[in-house]
Structures are given as structure tokens and as C-alpha cells.
Length: 270
Image (cartoon, rainbow, N blue to C red; front, top):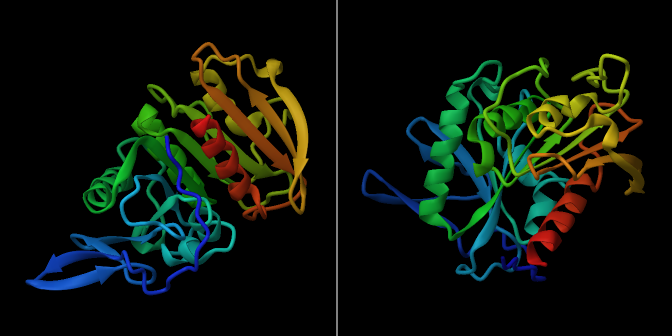
């Protein structure tokens, strides 16, 4: 799988911005101006230096509560990470600046599929390269989408938000799970295991993938803060689950998403 990693200035006007037709007039959707699907909308951010032809891996990111798509698009730890990594960022807008992730059959899951279908008509997309992410409530929405979309999702990248009920049933899961959570999070509380295990945030995915919880390999790594990584690579499903925990609170950890993209794209290219 080719991943275009090119240096180049970030063209604010987006030479390669896409067009839609409404009332016989051409309208451009990019950056702050959303693309519409009926009454709903999403935002899109191509990577730096993209030639307008090369197929792109995709990251669909669900914004946090009270936000909208321009926030992750312009976020230094999200939009900056994708555009410098050769990844197409898609940021749907939630109704009422929120998401419906509480139960299966979410209206927002259906909407997200429509967004992906719409993007595929406008951009050359690499098949099998769909990454899904979110922050806070948006992370819980990413979990809901991954639970229902299954292996259509190549990687789930959850940030500080899970299902409150880790006993939720999913027919299958994404090809890979990566999640990060702060031990001192008091907004989307760190979901410790029943005996206080730090592996609690990914219990659902460990169960679905038939991973032995105590078999995790651990290591430390850091950006501007230190992470403890739990990794399960010998699950009976053949899939991988990774959990990064830190001693902070409810935030998007600096450099975390960028590092995940580096690892994921390097693995795919090898």
C-alpha cells in the first residue's frame, strides 16, 4: 500500500478542493466550509503535497461533545498529524454537536457510512485503509461505528472515550484496536477492570478477539509525556489490540495520534 509522504506548503485554498453541485451552481467544500449530504454535513482535509491522483488512506474522526468538524480539522494533534502523514482526514458534524452512540442501530453510524460513500465518489481512496478515531464522546461514537462496521475498519483509534458497558456485544471488531486513556480522567472516567486492572478500557475488544488479558506485553514510550503500552498480539482472532495509558486527565495526548499513524503506515508499507 503506497502512502504519499511529501513535504509541501499547506495550500489554504486547496487547489484540489472538490466540487458538488447544488441548484446547478458549483459549490466548493473544504476546510471550514462543509460538504453536505442532505441536511447533514462533514469536513475534509487532504494531506500536504498531495498530487490529486494518488490513492489515500482515510481517517474518519468524530469530534468531542459540544464541538463540530472544524475543531479536529484545525487541531494541532489531529489535523496536523494527518496532513503531514499522507492521510485524508474526514470530520463529520454531529447533530446538536453530539453523537448518538448509546445503543446499536445509531443514526450516526448510518450517517457515517453515507459520508464515506460520498467521500469515495470525490477522492481516490485506498481500499482496506479506513481508520476511525474520535475524542471523548467522539471516541465512544468511533467505538460504536467500529462495533457495527467490524472489519470494514482497519484500525480503531480511540482517545479518552469508550463504551460505559464493556459487556456490549459486537459481531466482530476492527482489524486492529489502538486506544489511549488517562488514569486521572474524570470526564470520561478511566474504566478500570473489576479488580482495578489498567487494561479495563479494552476489555470488550479483548473478549471479542479472544485475547488472554494477562498475556499482554508491556513497554514504555513517550512524546512530551510517558505512556505505558499494553499489547496483545497473540489473540485467537489473529488481530492486535494496543492500549496506551498515561498519568494525565481528559485530553488529546500530544503526539499520540501522530505516532500511531507512523506505526500503522510503516507496518502497511512493509
